[in-house]
Amino acid sequence: MDSLRYGLALLGLLMATLATSAPAPENLRLMTWNIWHGGRENDRFRGPRQVMDVIRQSQADVVMMQETYGSGELIARGLDFHFQPRGTNVSLHSRYPIEEDLSVGEPFNCVGALVRLPSGRRVAVYSLWLPYGEDIWIPATRRASGLEAMLAACQPSAEVLERLLDQIHQRLAGPQYADVPVVIGGDFNSMSHLDYTEVAREHYGRPVRWATSQLMTGQGYRDAFRELHPQVNRAQDRTWSPRFPEQEQDRIDFIYFRGAGVEPVRAERIDTSAGLFPSDHAAVLAELRLGAAAPPQDVSLRAATYNIRHGAGMDDQLDLDRTVRALRALKADIIGLQEIDDRVGRSERVNQMAELGRQLSMYPAFGSFMEYDGGLYGMGILSRYPLVDVEAIRLPDGNEPRVALQALVRLPSGETLRVVNVHFDWVDDDGFRWPQAQRVHQAVTEGDVPTLLLGDFNDGPESRTLGLFRRSLQEVAKPAGQRFTWPADRPTQEIDYLFVGPAARWQVGTARVVNERAASDHRPVVADLKLRATTE
Image (cartoon, rainbow, N blue to C red; front, side, top):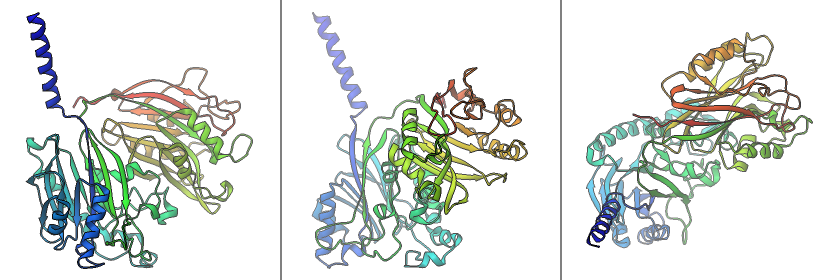
């Protein structure tokens, strides 16, 4: 009996040790808010109290504040929060103790702190205010500004951010911060490339690769709001400006985060209060779930490629709902789509990628080849997982203009997957296809990045086009006798393929041609893949 009690006591001690070393997951609510001249624009005294009310109702635990301007201490006392100012502009307000000052850069632009949560877990939090060169939010300024002028207006924010990120990472380089999640929020005075996409062209007019947001995602930071709201809607997303609706409305306030075991569970924009809202910026609230870091793990993926013929089936009837049903039946995590219309007359002016993303609850990307029938014609990618970046790679022209659509996808493991979707020229002579294939081959072999290449290659298995990719990538082969993908009703040709690379990172079986005869003139191809965890 004594040995049994001793064994139980050891077991209890072990369990207690494990519980201590790996705290239970907990949620943290963070807000970023430029409160506009200390929140006093409505009223010198009532305004700061309105700011406090908005923060209380949000139940935020930590507030990254900008334009604090003398109201910070009053607001912190009213909320019974810990307060860390720096200069006059940026400050931090925390329900939980501030353990250490982590500030870098100029006091007007950045304040940082190490916040200790009730579990003992620590989080590094930064509040930023970034400058801009020209006010491109004044009405009608965009119509007079070319793309270069718009990018130049927000270039100062990118330049300051680049310096701050370097300094933040140096400040947190010590081993004591190795497992500390980092949250960076603030008024960036610039927009996001995740908003200004080809899919959202009807909202923003043109795709723009804003430098500030690319700096953040390029350093592994995740945009909490966009991850939870993949369907872009300018009116519903904007943080500038609830007080000046006549100005250009944009999302310029962000909460970014990075860290193992951290996931967003809620994100919203707040721009209403009792009485007139006290700021010209909306507040952004994000709730993060902080869990334990998982060991490197394999990721199972189902990938598919499907030329959907802009929703017109073998019966030549336009029926995008039928396409949705066919896509849903694939149960794929990543789908490369060819022959996509964006507000084209023949497809009833529908933004097809936005609609497919909405109906399938997936992240959509679109790349246009050319203008067609009042809209744009091109290709798309749907992803179950967040998109980090999207780029249309211009290919040598053929019978029609062509692009390859590249998307960087953040997998559940935290690793980034490069997905490249192709639709090569269709004429019998491969004189156009071959230079297009060479350009894509260059793109998919740059760097040691896990890559999925898929699409309508418009070429047979014995062609030099397919031979080129087989030299560098691994083909996900189809079973003999079940390889044909076109035409859908009675297929006689194999022209749709999937490849992965580097081959050592992937476990692949066989691809399967789905017996879908009606929704398009192609049949979809689907494959179950496993990306092996990196050992580094």
